[in-house]
Image (cartoon, rainbow, N blue to C red; front, top):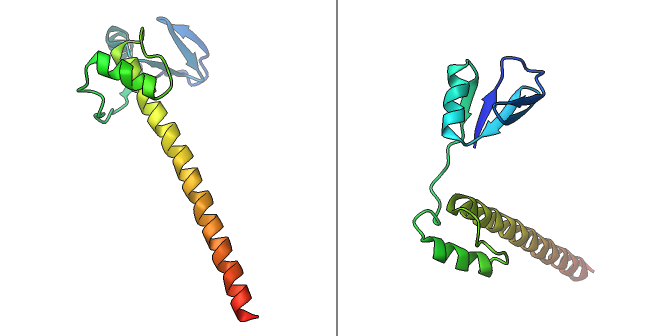
Length: 119
């Protein structure tokens, strides 16, 4: 998704079907991005790192979506990949939180054992 910056930093509204808030809009439609550039807007395209999902077939992606707990049928391949990456990020965040909780519990148990040893 590319960010489109208006010269008017206070512009709130719609221009060429793109919604702007405080002078910033977003789009991934190539002909619109070209139009905004031609009209003097600043367009900054987000650099997308390749995903492990990019080389997968659509059918494989929809099956993987089922494993992740959502129905990917009907989504365009690009949107399906975005949803899978979001799902991975969500699962990673949950896993990181669980790991932190386990580490905190281990540290608490270690500190309790240290106190018992000193007595």
